[in-house]
Length: 263
Image 1: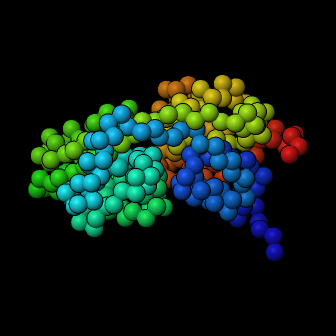
Image 2: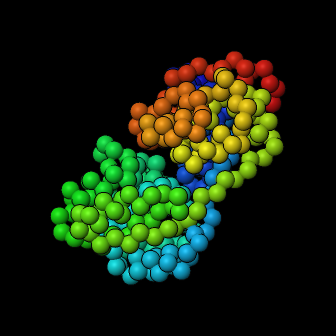
Image 3: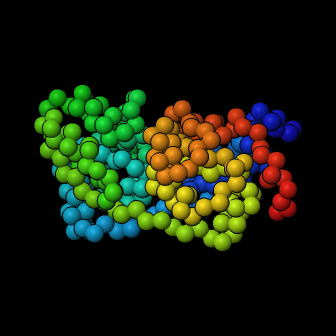
């Protein structure tokens, strides 16, 4: 029995997945199930923090049960935790900024207690945590070097005891010449834009993206960052989830240009 077009709406699509690791593998599997050929090309990776000692101490205290909450504002932080084999005891609850980050945590075996209902941002997460915790709590906020400590400031203002620790620096990862050519030639039909950092790398590494290549942003905040970076976003997922992103792409028909190239 053959699948109907409805079951496999992305048949024939080649879609660039801009992050590797367990998260990238999960996205690739979802795309395959809808008929697409995922091209996993990590555009960003994490580099060690310039203050490794502070991170080591924070992760030791975390493992020892010193914190009531751990806040995670990006999927990359999860990569860092996984690389450090970070132990999160049952007494520490994890708050993830959005579905992408929550999915990354779950993919490597961490349990997520809170994801903001509406606003997938540091402000949204702070608001929900503050509403939930009326007593002062000890909170570990792991963040990237470029992220402003918005979350920590809001939580501290509400009376919580927050350790804001830089977990990593974001660095660009150059793609292979083959992928560079495939993007320029229109053999990649869509590029998933999953964060502002990814948008920045897409802009820098692919200066000549054909007009028919679909640029899909995972939610309005990422779309805003991408447009600020100079990317013409074609479609924005209505929710900050991979499923919503893939669904948004599947509403489009395959640009004809891709058919002109032999494998």
